[in-house]
Length: 121
Image (tube, rainbow, N blue to C red):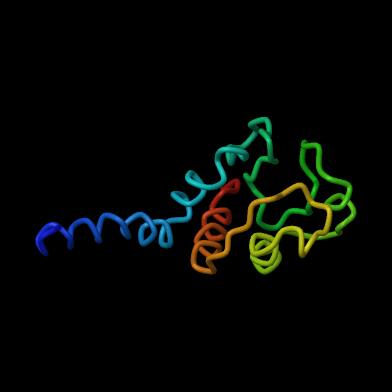
């Protein structure tokens, strides 16, 4: 059985990553997105498209093999559209190949804020 002195630090350690990730879109990107996407200007896409400059650009407009559904979507990646897409990608664009959703509104907001910083200055 754990003493109270040991239990409190364990609880803090267990919840600290989720608290930090909700406030840091860059950390969320590295944890959840970087395995498929890059976010570096000029870098070739990976399993997913390069997210550098994504905020404000037309969907399926970069060098990547996009799904026909995304090519035909007519979307522009503004903050509201990114939020809807990250909430449920296949609901906004049936037939998209993006399979990962971000259920937390706080995490989505942090990610989108981070993506907004990834642009030419």
